[in-house]
Length: 301
Image 1 (cartoon, rainbow, N blue to C red):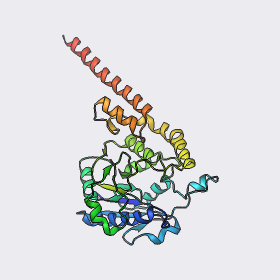
Image 2 (tube, one colour):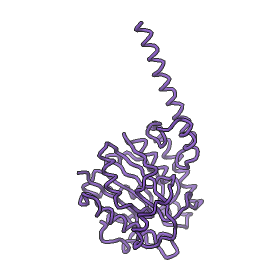
Image 3 (cartoon, one colour):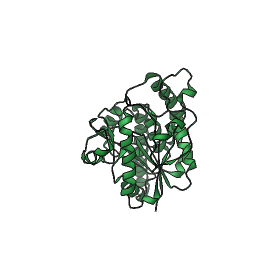
């Protein structure tokens, strides 16, 4: 039976933060989803955190070693949030002794009870990476005691990518730069790494598997952080991943060309110029196959 390690990064916050209410919902939903799964003993919940955040972590989670730096250490001019680097969080997976697949989600992403069961089903069909989009629920939910009602609330879809499942052997292939979490281009970084290196990735854009409290689609931009992540992605990450891209592994690849073009243009996590380049290569390869087929048929006459 496949063994799964799921890591999150809890943070102690004040009542003024949205996470003050949503984080306990996430904790409880993960614990419930593990209990619901048929093989709950093969699913382990982990955290990595700064030392000051340890006290809020439920007993059902295994605590990995503390994070020792944040975006503030790399950018002394920043004086805002103490945000971890995704590279440092993923390095904590190396402390996990026994797992076949890893999962990373943000601490504001809650799980449906059958989440792990569905993920294991997807894995059993041969997928070495799974990217799951969340559903959006109204902000009037504020307590884990309301989870049953949240489960029943279909909410609305969301175009972003914020739940990442991947096979253990992909971990050391990733190019993560110094991207910090909680800021745009985190999702783009993980998405592009998985479509670059996974052999058979699965994009799940519209299933009721995870949810987020809040109807917003585009997060607030903390401009210095946003610009930092953007520059790091396009300068240090994207060029190293681009040689591994294939159109068939990207979101919307199975749609007709005009539909996927529209969706690529509208989705902020994937990029139009990249799409045009991949589409050109795709058309070239198809044309080459057709011309070769004509060539062989002429030779057979």
